[in-house]
Image 1 (tube, rainbow, N blue to C red):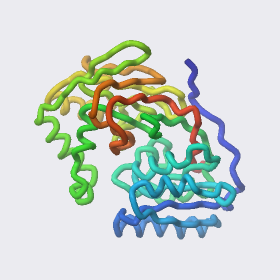
Image 2: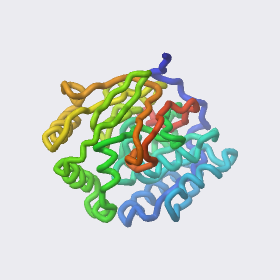
Image 3: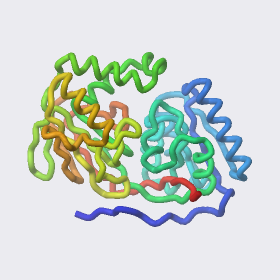
Image 4: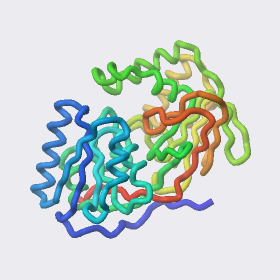
Length: 306
């Protein structure tokens, strides 16, 4: 097995001359729209050539990325949450263009993972003059994901969360749904095959990076620069286990529990029928699922040097 802990920057255009296509979901809301417009103005003041395109329906960001003219743009920037980034990454398969990050949604874990963060001045600096590096992504039944996939408890939470509640209270909607799932008693074991060995956890999370659900460190040894995953197998049941895992995740010590095992792997098969599979915070397929490292890297804009 081979892995790459880092990659050299990819050649980029001279400073402040980058041509950027920003893909924005207008359903993000008034405050987010204003934040997006301020970032666009700041990029133009930096000397960048900026074009914006608004999405009109689910999957539209994938279509835009798939049809982007790579001779006309250096960067396609996903302005939104994890779902927007996921759509753009899926549209970029086979494209030689860098992905930029403009965090606007409920969560944007890749912005945390790369270090771009959420401050407008840092986002602008990265897009205008940050280095471009290659990262690895995963594939679940043909659908790309940047950071995580899951089956079991977390997928059931994503499947059941109320979209209207999510718009009202943001990430807290997942906490509400997690409580419902925890007391609902639905902890059906998964049959997971890793490198020929079978496991039967109640939940499995495949981490392509360190973080899960925001700034929380779930898999300290994982990296988006490596061509391997950290597979977290959780065997607990009931509300106490959910509470325990939540505290462990918040403290960066999820792997310290005796009923949690973290395994390194490049291909994972989860058997079963009909259960939801989440990737980057959205339901993307159902069991059975095969999850692999995509052989094609993705170019991503990283933070600019201070």
